Length: 289
Length: 245
Image (cartoon, rainbow over all chains, first blue to last red; front, top):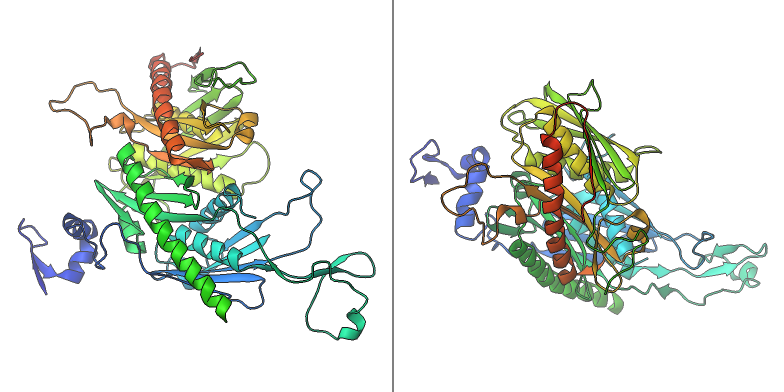
């Protein structure tokens, strides 16, 4: 397919794929002028999102989130611990984010990618600051842009899937997790402290949207190709009670003016509604099973 | 409602600012910036030949190393490094010295709230001291939102922990030596209104965030005039202090 460029320069006549590789910014700008993106999405639309709860059966709570091709797996493991003296009523959450080399050709085994460290820190901040509440592990299976969104979504889904296991006191007075296998004879002396698995009650659930800014256009939910070309990223996290949990814009050539801030927030609100619906559907699908 | 702050400041008052340039003689550029008790030392070495492995050789590369006051380098420091690197990349003219690396080393001397903004201000002053070509200056400020929704500027560490949420904001600042023919407004707002970087912690409503941004902009105008004054003073180790109200 020949592409004829009216400006008559080097990109005059060449195949679309070659043009895309050689002049990525111009390729995108020509699309942006028509308010559309190469994969056919309008500027404000996010990629297809799917959620699967209970992906890891050995974990207490887990979820697999896919935004476009970015795939993220979250698993929660709960442990019994003695709380610290300052906050005897609270547990604690430790978050680990792994980017194994399977996810992207730029990640090598050994040194963790810079993004991994930053995303895990951002995630801890967001989850802690939005008032949700144990050990958590996230693994990135496929990296295709908008890592933070996928991570947060899978984390949130895993939390909603989480069921606190039954605990009981054994003879020595220590709290022990109650396993369901095992013969009933020996276990009769132990009384279960909480009779059944219960769900974790979630406070306000945070949802996020990452956008890139390029001149006057805001692109929602960029793929990794778009992210690498347009250097300014904004991540807005809002929770279900319409409060702003985080507005994260780490530098970048494009400046954010007030109108842009409100636009990003508006896009995030829309996305939040979509995500809430998806989460509910996944949840009710699971309940039926 | 006037929030009574422990050190007697009004909600809009910044702490006493101090800026010294050229304190490290071996570094190409250095500056120390303190806001009240928070003090950060920044040193710039560069441009040096060659870029790092994955970086674009057609542009200059910026490297930031963040040294905490105590303890080992962990995730928080790496995140600060990344934020500072992106912020500095957006104010430097990267195409002037391609295939070079400029290192900015930030040493935290004391942390009493608003650490990242202080570090960004120090780094900007150090970059000017080293003579690295910049598009415009970056001025950073911390605004926090109290329980009742009022905005308080430049908190101490105690205030940061007690407040509902806070935001670090970085704005550009340039003095126009020649006024352009047409207006320099973008979308109806002058250049100074754009946010280079924003990092928030804690929850706040969207309106509160926008209020923070407005207050932050106004305060940055004061901060930047202080920065320009101190940078215009003599080359030798100068000590400029002021109490901006």
